[in-house]
Each structure stands twice: as structure tokens, then as C-alpha cells.
Image 1: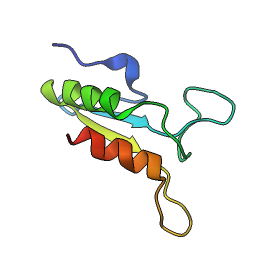
Image 2: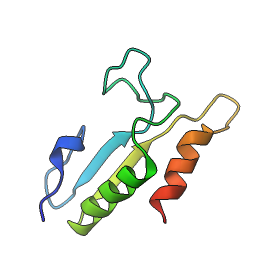
Image 3: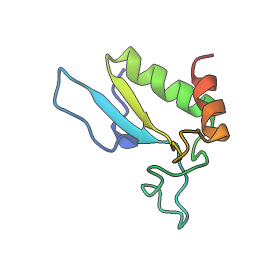
Image 4: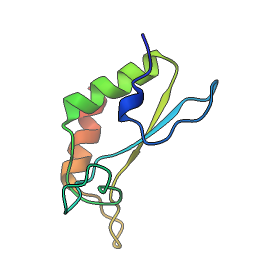
Amino acid sequence: MTLPSFRAILTFLPPCRIFFTHLGVSPDGNPWGGWRRSGCIRDGAYMRDYVREVNACGGVVSIDIQIRDDSTFDEEQLRCLFEINK
């Protein structure tokens, strides 16, 4: 099994394999413009498979979500995060 490099923004050299990704949706449709945005660009099943695939190869996934000024979270993103753990 190989690490899915096409889905990662940034990776560090081995032995540390950290993959950064986001859940937010860019208002202009840019696939990389969803950082700190609400909504979900991917569904929970996709993210669960992605995280498991990276973990199986010894990697770690860091997922960017939106945290509002009042310290609340985007409900759609929370549902997606809970889906990853199923």
C-alpha cells in the first residue's frame, strides 16, 4: 500500500508522514480555497477511507475545520468528523 499523496497539501519527509487537508468549501469553487470555511467538500465515508488508508501506511491526517468567533463548530463538519470514527 502506498500513501495517497494526491490528496495532501503538504507532507514532511519520512519517517514523519503528516497529511493536511480541509473540510470547508471555497466560495469560488477553488479546491484549495476551503481552509477555515464552513461546509464539507467531502463526505464522511470518503474521509473515513482516506484517514484509514493514510493510517495503514503509518501516516497521520490533520483536518482543518471552521471554528467560529463564538467558539462554535460547523454542524456539517462535525457530522463528517463523527462519521470518520465509525
